[in-house]
Amino acid sequence: MVLHASGKVRDVYRVDSERLLFVATDRISAFDFVLASGIPEKGRVLTQLSLFWFDFLKSLVPNHLVTANVDKYPEALKKYAPELRGRSMLVVKANMYPVECVVRGYLSGSAWKEYQQSGTVCGIELPKGMRESDKLPEPIFTPSTKAASGHDENISFRDMAKHVGTADSETLRKLSLSIYQKAADYALTKGIIIADTKFEFGHTANGIVLADEVLTPDSSRFWPADSYAPGKAQLSYDKQYVRDYLEEIHWAKKPPAPALPEPVQLVTSAKYVEAYRRLTGHELPRG
Image (cartoon, rainbow, N blue to C red; front, side):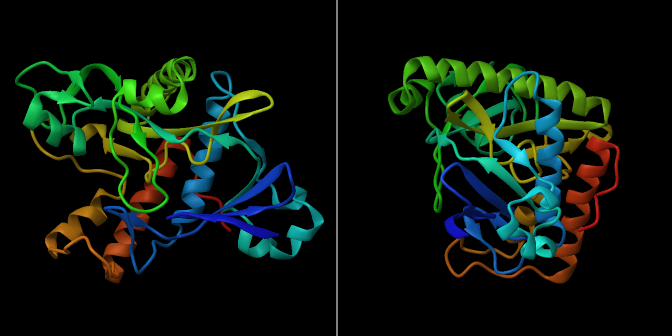
């Protein structure tokens, strides 16, 4: 097994010419830096929640999953079963599109900052007088560049088409909006607002597939619906709690990235686990 890539959160190993092993660690990134301490259970939440969504969304789009059952992994991987169980998946190798497909249903984060300056988000004009966390008239597609390290940058759809091609860009936009709407409608029945999220897609012999992680607290903003109140930042089940802590300590957002105090780690972990429990209706499987 050869290390194929190591990202902010995942380590990816080459199993053979056709398959990769994705392993979700407990690392956490904020403001595009990997912090010096992780979040307990985080890797298992990301994996198990992605598996839930892959199954939920399979009628809309195929995905790259082969299996997440370590007992069905190739023989050479089975000796690592204790480390891999619950936080890994065997996937088909795909040619990944070099963009992140972001869908926003609410005005928050970098979109809110841009709107305050220009009244637009990624070149899309929005109604005047909107407040922070307001629901948008309809979900919007706002792609970004994909950076292994450093800053992702929001780009216009026209810029995306230059990187990906017009036809594939149109397909990815349509898919992303359909996936978001189906997931957001479902999540609302579980008391969670999906304010925004990002998807990654690849291309295999079978066409376009949904890949990597899907609708997790790392890739989405999850807000409890019962406390939603536009006009301010919202309570959340995602890593906003970590971002808020880093803002409070006035970290300069430059290396070295700080470690998190144990209470911050534990509260964040509880938020991730609660998001899994509420969305799936199940307790997080033990490793």
